[in-house]
Image 1 (tube, rainbow, N blue to C red):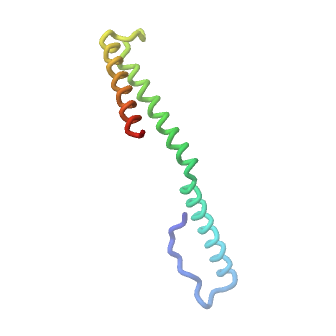
Image 2: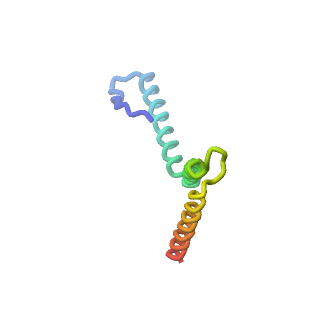
Image 3: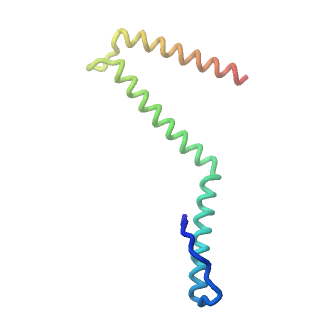
Length: 102
């Protein structure tokens, strides 16, 4: 979007200068309409945000998996117990949020 503050053509402007100003104004208006259209496209913005969250969750899951496994990929005994506790905490949180929404 153009942010230049160009002055309007004066009273002694030529037809070419007026035409150029009109074309530039149309281009600026088109960019503004495109920006507003993108901002108002809630469905596309929601899909984009969901994709970001999904990617972030995948990264977190990969890091969590790496932190609870040894070099061979097998879970460590303490990690297994920690995973059970973490899973129980997640289930509890989901239940609490679910109950509040009802």
